[in-house]
Length: 325
Figure 1 (tube, rainbow, N blue to C red):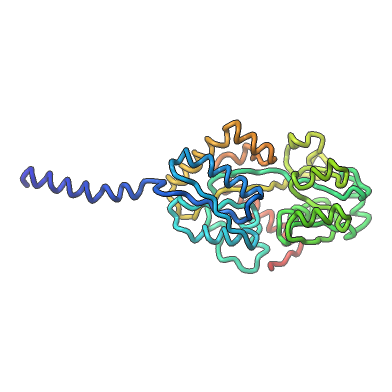
Figure 2 (figure 1 turned 90 degrees about the vertical axis):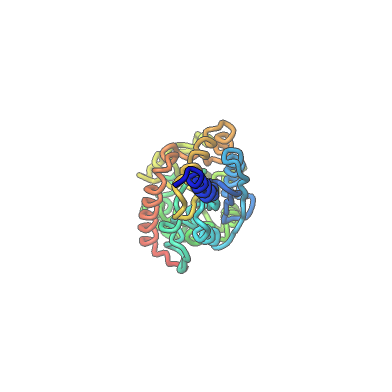
């Protein structure tokens, strides 16, 4: 073949390959982070914190979209069915990922099959809070009182199958006591009734309970993490308080559709790893009580953690006789 024809063929081939190469570059457009909650909550705050950090690192705008409803499962379903090109992420806590398969009668996606965890954005302890009029001052007192008054302690939660519900059932089963569940549409409503004495106990986020504890209206007996919280140094962990092997974390992770290319996932993981170690970012996470334990910092730890959580929740739900709704 003459040299000119060879050059012409090479030029045509390069012209044909170039658009494909450009199409494969990632990210090639703005990223969308879908949050299954209204603006203002912890998952929304963390989504916006992540978006703020990733935008300059990835060179594309990262936009937060709020899609509340059905315990965040609307958002999870939308992301599970989104194009798996690395441009759509889900920001979710346990409700739509580990809890939903056990407490929702119909689910249009399979969290384990359809979504891949990218990074834990925040994780923190719940607190065990009781009405100040309840005659208990320690977790040991609570266990003795509950044993002497089976099912007379009403505990509140943000709804059937919520983390507060399952943490309370986990406590009941671990401590061998019986209590009565009163579900609400959100922790705020449950806290109102805890303050009013209609319920006596709830597991909730520290920021929900601590202001009322400082006012003397509720008593915080313990935290549910392995370590004490820096913001509550005098409050023991559940294990320190005598409940063996008790740990229950509230967490928020970023997920992508399962078929997302590995290079895009790894780039997202690297960008967040760089961001989370910035002092300003760590400071914000610490203020929220959501600085994740170091054991969850590695992306490789997330899938096993979620499998273990689902296995544990399966046992809790079965023992509690919780029926899907």
